[in-house]
Image 1 (spheres, rainbow, N blue to C red):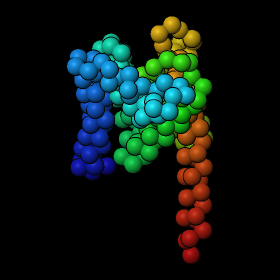
Image 2 (cartoon, rainbow, N blue to C red):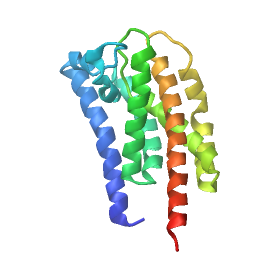
Image 3 (cartoon, rainbow, N blue to C red):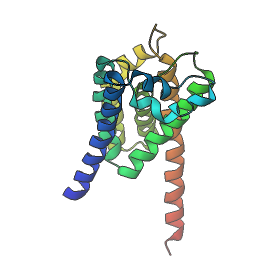
Image 4 (cartoon, rainbow, N blue to C red):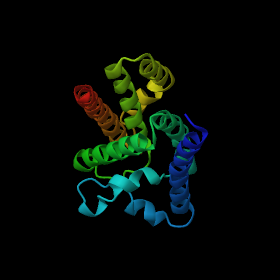
Length: 196
């Protein structure tokens, strides 16, 4: 990987995490009402903006800090395959997990990037199992060893925690990994058939 490409990927990661921090701190310190407008509130049409807005707002500095580490680590792993790959996977997880949350979640204002984080976890684990390459399986094993305990705990219903966002994000990540694997295999077959 060239140094310029590495710098661009690092800039993408910094910009995405920086945007989460900027919006979250703005909501926490200057405009708490904005967090409510960017939340997913199930079955309310005016909260569909939360499908994109929810990951950018957090309920406290502690909540924001807790989500930053996994965002950076999982984001860096995804960016190893390129910026477009990272952005497409992230958007797919956020939209599909958020939509299922909007359809089936508790009647509450759901905020935070943890749904996307659980989606990243599900995506990386399932991708490794489908691809069965040493590099992917190594990432899968490391992700499981480092985060499986906290991920399981995050799926347990708790007061004040959107465990549904965690669950639907995880399922979305697994589904996106399956679709991405199928598309990759289709491209590989098409490329093989195009060779004279």
